[in-house]
View (spheres, rainbow, N blue to C red):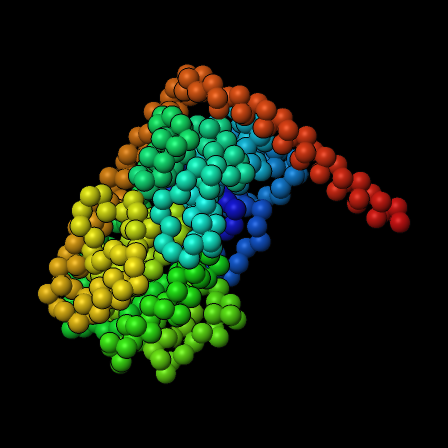
Length: 415
């Protein structure tokens, strides 16, 4: 597994996802090595405790080739398309027999297109036209998905987008939502009277989360607070910047709390989760967590996208400020409405995020492709063509950078 960074499951949904996949592979009895060129952080997961080896690698350095050739993996999983761009050609050359898989986490193309539209229109952006979607970023990301033997998506909405708008073959794609264990999905949770107030949670480095905090501060929360003058909104998230701390205003019930040390404590104390996301992609970890912990949520069409599998939402979905405010107040104050929403959330979580069902389907797909890899690649000539041209151009650029660094070092030594 080649990561863009070392996984921090307590900081982001991306970190949680990488840990899910590591554990899934380990349950098959597969030895797993996680490698990254990023610097480790104090919040990174303890991979050794998971039975996972780790390796520090470098971009644009042939030492990676030698290391990979010695390791001889049967499968290489790239953490998002950027890792495939950086290392895909080296993997293809060093271990051509290895299955190459991209974990998308969410579609950067879709998230960026919605973000650009939101900047212009200042509203919830779910549908985007081709002018916004067919960007330079899309050229890179979609090409990487064509080059891979398989790409994993968390959202069926994104799978539909890729097959319909970008004409990717469904044989190259697999939708695997979150994989939560049985105990988490079936444990009893605190009821209405044991909870109070509102919560929102999300990594502050993630642009959709920061935009949601600003929208709450400027528009949504003042209207909720006007109807519930004693209510508090607790805002949790990793990597809180100074600009976010300036929004901290306990007197008005707007509390920037920073990193959540215990997600269960945060979620199970709150009566309602607020997630007014105006743009984004993938499925939202905060909303999946809310369902598992029995906390109804108020979100937008972007927030709920690809999550409920046709079941009614565990709370409310509304793209208007008035609608979100009314739903938030109603859920917070009306026990019957809240209890019904909680049960709906449980139903979605059990249907959509079952570890055994989702994991079994993904492993089955991987093994099937692995058993007929040569034929699978030949059936998808576009991917072969893109691999040929991209890998050659990327290889020469990477070699030029590596040679330049070597020459710079030689010059420094001579000086």
